[in-house]
Image (tube, rainbow, N blue to C red):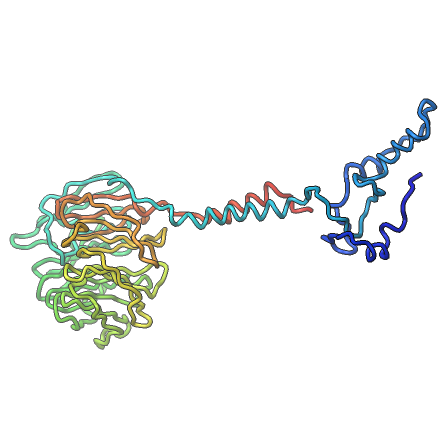
Length: 451
């Protein structure tokens, strides 16, 4: 019934004709994009017998047969096609790969733009009065523990503020002519360590809010303290750094003196094997815990031009340390402690009083004090590793004395010489890999895995 032109699909014709062919499929696998599946379904399932109506002549029946047996280009319809077909102006029906590529490109663009969509808050989420707070650059008078309690020294008093219920407890009032100069929660929040102007280092029980021990060893005020498991490290105006084992009867396990002026900054690395110390002689020392008893340091960085109080270890690059210099320096420097080299230095144009890394985004926040320009008293957010400035917050009317962040890493509190504590929702919320999630949803919902 079908009148086929046998040579049009033969190899000889393919070689002799100037027609250009597209071979998108395998030689032995049918190319479904070249088939009219609806017509094939109709022909395969049609069980009706041929009936010749006498009202229609042979010419009409031939036209109908041609419509059913020929494709849109007038060629014989074949269910399986093992060869290419002439390129035509018809739009391809193979959209799955195109859809995947377009969707992936759109999601990738969104993912690439996400880090740059970060915005600073317009203002504080909370402000607390901090009367009698001491305007002392070298002291470290605030710490936010894993129990969600903020400990802060206000003059000769020590207060505990519970961030969950906003309850305030006055822990103690120091004796006359004495006052807290440093404070730090232990990692398990069982203890609160407090250093004093008088050189005392007291250990307080967090549950009973009572002193349980005095750790001796220093002769002058203790400006900075830092925990490393059961080891409490203290730095003093007497230029010594002491490691105390709070479990032992004899608490001093190592005592080193390398700084030529007051030790005003201490920070242990996340692994607890490396200690960074900053001094008022503008130097940073890097210590290996296993070698501290021999007084041998790993590195001594002398690039700052003023006291180094602000120190912070990078949470995503374990070998990177950030440091900030005082009024005559005004720089944030990043150090590679494995190589002992300076990675970069950024002039912030203001005294750097505190540094906090963002654990959810690759950023670092700096708190600033005195400046000869308009950059004083600010909080500044910097992208890492480019150290480009995201923006600044200048709500404090006097210099920022100290910074610390909440246990979940979403909120930062700044203590200012304007006698306020200001809370900023600046570090959150954490992000998920939206590109992989959205792409996975797209592939599972929009596209069948069977082709």
